[in-house]
Length: 224
Image 1 (tube, rainbow, N blue to C red):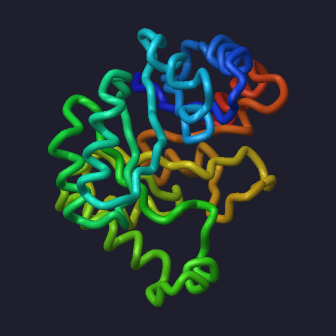
Image 2 (cartoon, rainbow, N blue to C red):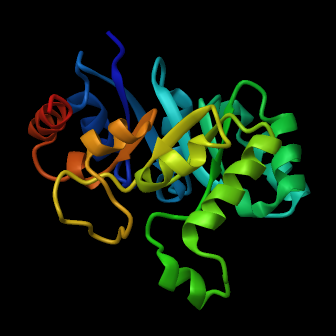
């Protein structure tokens, strides 16, 4: 039977806490990977810690967003970490995406669409005139054209992305209940997988409080 796949967001700079998250999320029911973002990878000991992690699926959520040459240089600079997944904003443009893909090697390059903390109102405030779903659709087309390996989008937009992008879809903004924190476009784990997500990204609903108990809650959600 195919296992559901979850990236646990290790959003902390505390190495002991991250070790605890990794230890307590081990289970036989779900395939687990670990997402490290800007907070951890820019911390004093974060990079060194990731470089020593063995036999774990590592997702470096750096969200590169720059001119082609800078994106390429950044990817080369973290080659030694041998991460499995690395994010780049699709809004960096087609040239940057193609250039990044050319040097990414065995690392799966993941295009980030519109952040799940944003909605139509947020986009309008920064000058976007198209509605959110149309932008995500256009970005998915561009990610496909650049031959990216995966896409990050809200679980609410998976069906839109799937029309033009046939590879892995990774969805953050996953919540077990109505406590959205700073997210605006959220779904439950069950709804996300039902929509067609390949990987879920889950942080606080797993890492806050009793981690082992939270994993059990997650598994119960998926058994609906």
